[in-house]
Length: 267
Image (cartoon, rainbow, N blue to C red; front, side, top):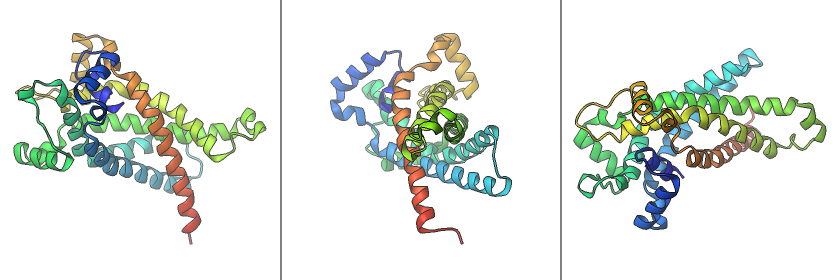
């Protein structure tokens, strides 16, 4: 779904056309283009943002007790910005590896894997080239993580406190509670963040000789030249990817966190 989302964002094709072209040109394996970069991105960006968020949340609750929704969103934004800066090289490589299919053969980068791609960028564009698009990436991450992590934590609290769910007792069960909160979080996250995600994709895949515009300039350019609705291009595959990703990630994080506290209780 991530492959389809990126290819839709750098083209004007529909989801159906993008999926068919991907299948015809690469078969089933075509849907897993850039897998090594996607895994590297998760190992850098996701672990950083989740670790930072949970650490800051625990510290905040220890010192201030109950945290309101705005504070949770703010903590999520801080975690997202730091994590995305760490993960920008892998994120940029992923965009380029996936978007290669939309370019003419003579203009393709043809990266073999994430490691060779990073060395290639370092050699041809300099070390700072690995952080191309870092600002829009951090801007997107601030929105994504503020909405996702803050909403997820707040949704769990609301579901626990709602009389309807409390009466049934079902939602009190850990995994159903986490699943429901994650689904609620993913809806808000996707709708709020995809315009910045579209702009980020265009900037990181920029092929012109001129310097790419900033994220706000890119958003305005897309809205003026293509239509406002183009800012939500790829929403369906974006949500289809984000919803299960959010559910699996947040449930696993909560379960691992509980296991950690069980085996390593605070002294």
